Length: 125
Image (cartoon, rainbow, N blue to C red; front, top):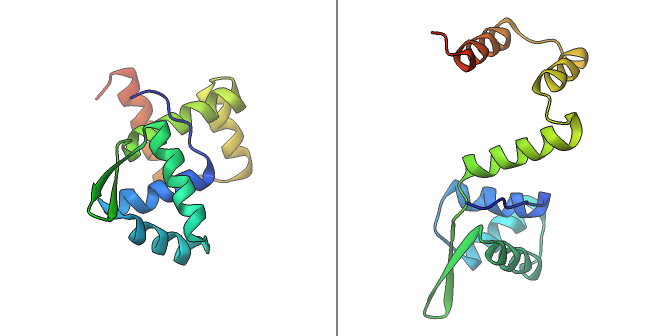
């Protein structure tokens, strides 16, 4: 999948689709109206942008358009994380973790999870 950069608004539409899919345009506009107060035209504009980016596919069923995600949530999250890491921390994971832990104490469980992640990255058991 090519790198698809999602805006915050596009991410919100994708979250609605990832939650349950496929969905009709009406279902998505209702979801966005309830969660963000967006108009039908705003939601349809965002759906068109997502379709143009290759993140969303659409099938026409009679007079209805049915949308489905092409971009998987995990892929999008990884792309967003990598973009953030490179943009803000010049690709340094250790600098990011150091920065995060200066402002917020980690729980014992979070520390244990980080150790497990690091051990796994190192190739250990």
